Amino acid sequence: MTMSDRITPIGLDRFRAEVLALYGPPLRAKATHDKMRHVLDLVASMPGAETTADLTTATVARFLAARPPGEAPHTTYGLLSYLRAACNHAAAEGYVRVSPFTVRKHWLRVPPADPARRRHHSRAEIARVLALMEGIG
Image (cartoon, rainbow, N blue to C red):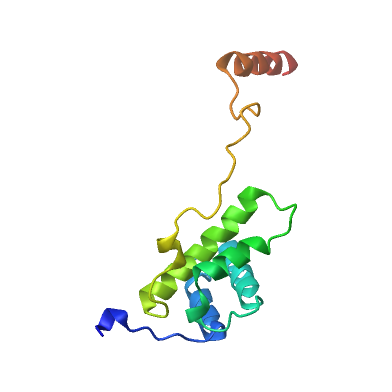
């Protein structure tokens, strides 16, 4: 057994405290810290998740299945990115042999943005608004 084969799982409470120390101010924004805390709380509340050794592909699949049915796919994808960061940290520290996101990269297929929803105005539209503003002022 080589050194890279050895893992040292720790309890999820200790892991949560370690990750939140890395994701708290001043290293990260408060909102980032809050989202990471939310995701780690969701994982810790799942049955069968007690140590970092339980951060497996099955755990990620259960995490996705436990999301509320009306939740937007982009919200779920955002939460999944925080779980990915936590699992990658666990792998880097030797708490798990491999991150479940290394085994399966694409857990969720997010639909593309609505093409009917425009994100930018044309130059002609901007010019028309500016001309109207000139007339008001």
